[in-house]
Length: 54
Image (tube, rainbow, N blue to C red; front, side):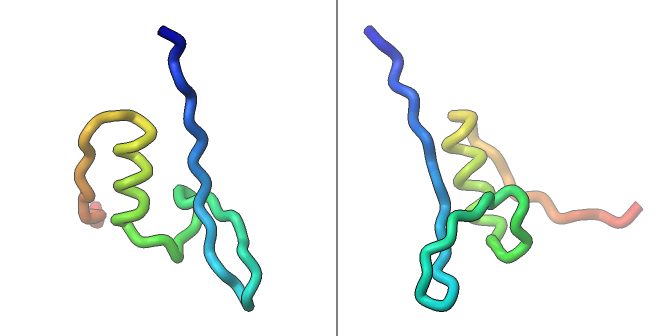
């Protein structure tokens, strides 16, 4: 059976224009979106963690 490869893209609307974004590099994107992207990309479950100041 041939393996299927999927490509996911994220878009936001800016002034009525659809703009493609990279959710891993954009601070405007919520952690939930990044979590969903990580789960889809790896096929594993991930958890959101709070940043801890060292």
